[in-house]
Length: 391
Image 1 (cartoon, rainbow, N blue to C red):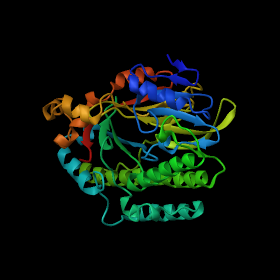
Image 2 (cartoon, rainbow, N blue to C red):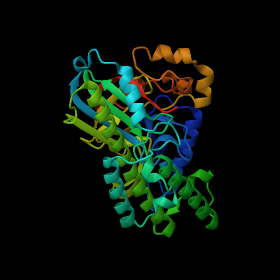
Image 3 (cartoon, one colour):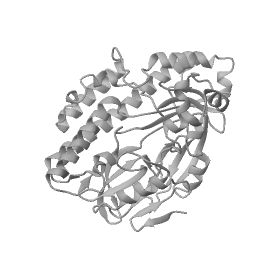
Image 4 (tube, rainbow, N blue to C red):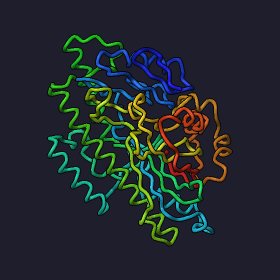
């Protein structure tokens, strides 16, 4: 059951570190929060605001509380195939083909654009003109970033649901261009607050006031970056589908269901009688009937869900397992052999680079989903058979 930690902070997390709790209380104390901040079951310490926060604000936005990977989210496709259609196929071969088709790791991008990427770039260029933004000023090579994965907890997976049907699942965001947009506006907000003699409990809670030029420039850049993130995932899925079809010798493009959702973004929504800027930093839209995705950690279960429209949670749900141990702590706690044992039966790149992504570095996904029982209905439970990550 959710609990009020303070009047303007509702907590759904049964596992909550002291530092995370303190950070969330500090953010919830900002004067423009309405009606309250909702802390999701996967909440953990973040930059500016807790990852796993749903932050409704009146007349202001805190760029660091939106996050630096603007538009980060997930796409999943139900292929209509069954595991029996994959019998005898070399799963390592598909993993390698996907790794070759999609640039992995931080700083990696395409050498040329595919026809589908060219279409997306044309759309994004037109969107930039309409919004009056200049993405080239942040990253001149953003066009070649489209269709790249990144690193950390970003992934591409082939999974099976409870019926042994095959799903393609991936997680990424707005890549380098989105990060630079976010970092720029975090600095602008800090300068804005300093120039207006605004005292802050923490400099990463710096905000921009609605009606100012700085606010509107951020909103326009934010909207564009969110669109870039959506097209980035779609471009990757297009390449994954092509690789999968060729590997399986079938046509899986007539999917039974396609689900896409952001989990680091801001939209205008109406909650508790007022129109607010709702920033979901590590949370998904769980409005009644809305389809969403909640991935577990590397080697753990993931879920395809439908929102229940919980008003208290601001129509939101967790975006994943949520870290329980920092990356540096995980490298001290776990070994590459530990990861091999946990990944038994899953095709993945056996690399020491992934030790900090060990499933036990994250909260147990079963507990997260139990905490989220009032927020979403589980439609499909997925278990991966192939995992692709960037070093």
